Image (cartoon, rainbow, N blue to C red):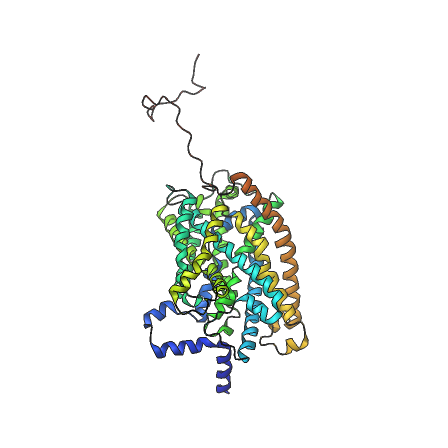
Length: 491
C-alpha cells in the first residue's frame, strides 16, 4: 500500500521530485542557498498567497470604506474573501485534474511551467484558452502597473523633492530587475519578508489612527452616491482577486495536491490585517479619505510612518514580480525561450514585457480609482467568473464527475453544492462586480482623467503655496509682526 501511495504521489508531484533529486546529486547549490532560494512547501505557498493578496490595496481600503461606509466595507471584505477562496480552490482542482491527465500521458514538465490558459486548453479547448489568456494577461499587466503607481505614490510621502511621475521612471527601472527571478519556486524569502512588511504596515495604520484620534468635525457620510458605493465595492473585489497566479504557485510546490485550503487560510490571515486597519483609518479621518486614496497622505509624518512607507515600497517590488512573472512565462513561450537554461538569456528576453507596464503607469497614475476599474473589468472575469464556469463545464457529464481526481467537499453538498455556489458566483460577480461595478468605476476613472488629465505629473499632490505678496526689492515683513484685522481697525 505504501509503495502504491508513493507512486501516486510521484505522478502528482511530477518533476519537482525529480528536480530535487537531481539537485542533491549534483550539489550545485549550498544548503544556505536552498534555504533562501528553493521554496516548494505548503508553507511557501501560504506565504506567497498571503503576501501577494495584501499589497498596496492595504492603503486604498480606507478610501473604499469612505465610499461604502463602515458596515458595507466590512461585509464586502468578508463576502469577497470567501468567494475568492472558493474560486482559488476551483482553480487548484482544475490544475490537479489537468496535470494528472497529462502525466498519465507521460508529458514531461521538467522545464515547463504550467499556466492557467494551458489548463483551460487541456480541459476545455482552444476557445477557453484564448479567453483565459486574454483576461489573465491583461489583468496581470495592469496589476503590475498598479504596483508601479503605488511605488511612486508612497515614496512621495518621504521625499517630495521629485514629482510622482519622476519616481515612476525610477521605480520602473528598479522593478525591471525582477526578470532575473526564474519562477515562483524562488520567491521563498521574498514572500516571507513581504508578509512581515504588510503586517507591520497594517498594524501601524491601525495603531497610528487610534493614537491620532478623530479629526475635528469628522464625518462618516458614506455611502452617499451610488457611483462611489460600487467603486468602493469593486476595489474590494480587486483586493481578494490575487489568485490569478494560483496555477504558477501550485506548479512551484513539491506536492501541489496540498494546496486545497491554503488560499482560504491565507485569506483569513489577510482579513486580520485589512479589517482593523481600514476600519481604524476610516474612523479617524472619515470623509477626508474621499479625496485621499492613499492612507499615508492623512497620517502625520513620523519615523514609524517612514518605516511603513519603505517596507511597502520593498513589498510592492516583490508584488510586481508576482504579477509580472506569469507574463514573463507567456512571453518566453511565445518567442521559444521558455525552456532555455541560461538565466541571463531568459532575463534579456523578458525585458520587453516591462516597457508597456512602465508606459501605462505614466499614462494612468490614478492610484485608487485604477484598482476599481481593473477589479470590475478584469478581476471579475479572470478569477471569479471564468474559473466557476470552467469547473461547471469540465465536470458537466456524469463520467467526468465519476473520474474526477478531486471531488467537491461533502460538507458543501458535493457536486450539487459546488454547482450552486458556482452559479451564485457567476451571477453575483457579473451583475454586481462587472455590471454595476464596471459602470461606477469607469465613471469615476473618466472623472479622474477629466480632473487631472493623462500623463499628470503629480496625481493628488498638495497644491504649492501661493507666492507671498510684497515688494521683492525689500525684505518681507517679520513673522511676528501682527496683522491688522477688520475688528480692530478704526477709521
